[in-house]
Image 1 (cartoon, one colour):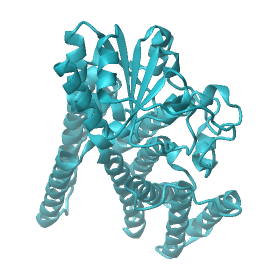
Image 2: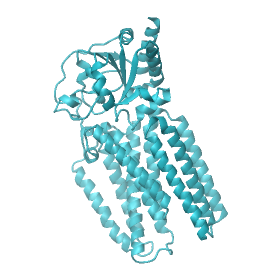
Image 3: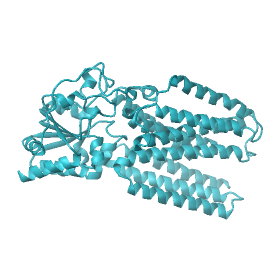
Image 4: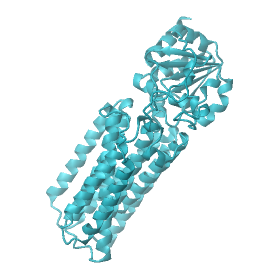
Length: 474
């Protein structure tokens, strides 16, 4: 490859990196998210075309190999497009977890193939040692990402139990696996030729066990953070693969994904008054009890759809708090129709979003955007809480832990200290649920027993549709 060609390829990779940065910037806000996606797509297309050009320009590359590569890219793109179009929003967390696993297994394959392939271009000594360390780290992080993502996919899908698997001495087990992996790096780096392959496979196997065990020990309440963490892991796995391959763009892109995923995980942990270490190694997501330590007293009062319609029709301000139950019922379109109906009557309607609502970061925001809800009606928790005492009616749709007052008042509660949406300050709270089951954290919610709370039992979409019909009939 001539110097001029190398300069062109470097410039193309640099432009791809800029597009990826613009993509992340666009995805930080709802009103620019579509533009961010377009930047990301453009950056990836440019990166793929540049990589194919670099590969084809190298001498000795058979045309058949290039054709196989293009065919594989076409098949992968087609499968991805079909999955993206067919998946329901309730299944998006599982899809994201599975995509993370693909990145992990790709990093493992890159590391192993780079070790087995001839390395005459790498000088013996320190350069070779660094290359072997890059391979071992890339394979280890990739294997943790792969098995952890598969377990997360199974938990989100319901294939695996959402309850945490708490083995005796689990922290010592994790530490032992980590130390054993580090110990295997020494003979791996000292082996001649490909004689270190058994040690590399041992690192892969132990990292796979570690990744699966880490996620198996995390309960359902923490799954949104787990998905975000796995996103970060997949980024670092990609960056490690970039070091192995000597690909600057892959290093930059992986670092962007890894750092942004870590930042998002920290934000979500703060929203739950937790630390990342607390999530990974145990917390309220590992509670097995069905109730909080403090007994809940009071009486549950049910309300019919016609009564809810009368209440919201007489209100000046209404706040809607969506939760995963709204996603399961696919009620977002009905919720937007209800919002339009109320706004046509001059009633102020806004939405309150908790950072960990649903099973995926931004899950509720995407659902509402899909239904056509304007972005300016959707407020974050810290923006809506100061207005709750001036709100006439709050509609809680399939949410539980994120509106639990025990998080602020019950020091014995597993979720004590977690910031929540303070819906109980409103004049009337209507909670739409199928039944009285506890939320992901397995904690009883005293909100349901308060004097200003009414329960609207049933499927969220059917309940909202019934309220709309009662409004129109009235």
